[in-house]
Image (tube, rainbow, N blue to C red; front, side):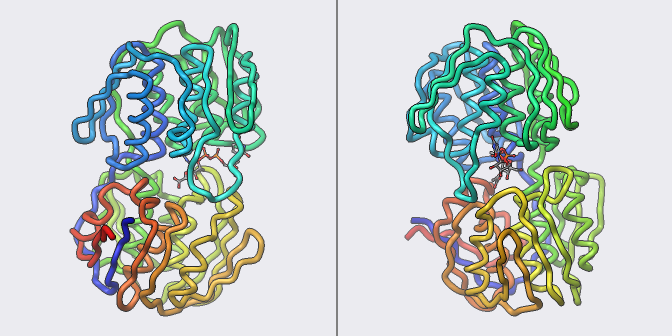
Length: 417
Ligand code: EPU
């Protein structure tokens, strides 16, 4: 079992280069099978969620060549067969194969997807999208058999702007007959990245990044090359690290607009940020002020940076309030922050952080990916040694986190115990 050991207190200075976005790459890889030729994707992060998707591709018979951050996928030899439970459950994004296989073969058999245990995470909106395009869904426990005689464009109003349901509906609609409209679509940059990829293959998708997306189905998609956008959540995590203990810490290879909901919050708190074209430089300042945060879909403050910023709020003077509106169980980091010396109380979907408090190194557990990131940040400023277990969660989503933080001065290592 892997653990991370951190000895806190080292100033972070230098440059951290941000990798390709996990939540974009995990959709682009399944989307690639919609064409029958080669799709080449650059800037794919080297994280275990990508390994899990490649395992599914290989299981289905696709040719997968990985060379550093480039993946070339040849889908011409795919055989549509039931994806076993074990690999469906490895990650949430396995369900992008549900839509890609349905869109390509009009039939798919697989299981309810996995993913971090941060809430119920139903897939009803994805199924609503499939049904609107003419598919029939048969549920047998957590196994789904989805079939369609013909996939026809339809009108889908999403009950909430779900990232997964928006991407899944786009993937099925790309080759359906006629036009599909998605209303109340999610607007995350990862959705724009996926739509651009499909358009590069010959799809006709307009409006991605707005709440109405229009997809006119085409018969065939052709080969293409495409690049994953920078990971705004990885970037945000290291920007927070800079606010906690940075001395001109440069976070580069980012799209600054994608992290604006975070950087504007940090400026309100009192963090010093210099912004360049594709980077920010962050330094720790004194006397941070408390603030209130409400998680929302893009361009609002992202739920995926809610747990990481909690560590910073423990260093702000006054009471900060976080309202988590996306997931029901995304405060599992709080127990461990409190163990380290924080004073945080939870009431329903709100957390109240009383600061500033000094954090001390302890043994803690990464209950999920972003909870793990929050604890890494806490370890960086805590006195003494922090040992985080269950860190496979962290390695699912942060490429080379040990090296990236070590290179800018952190005392951090991966222990294989
Ligand atoms: N929801 C439903 N029904 C649905 C779909 C969603 O009720 O059919 C609810 C969910 O339960 C949740 C909310 O709507 O409360 C938002 O879910 P959404 O579908 O937008 O999330 P997702 O597609 O499952 C992706 C990211 C998450 C990120 C969210 C929100 C991937 C693989 N995952 O999840 O990333 O939190 O969008 O931005 O893209 C992470 O990276 O740590 C992570 C959890």
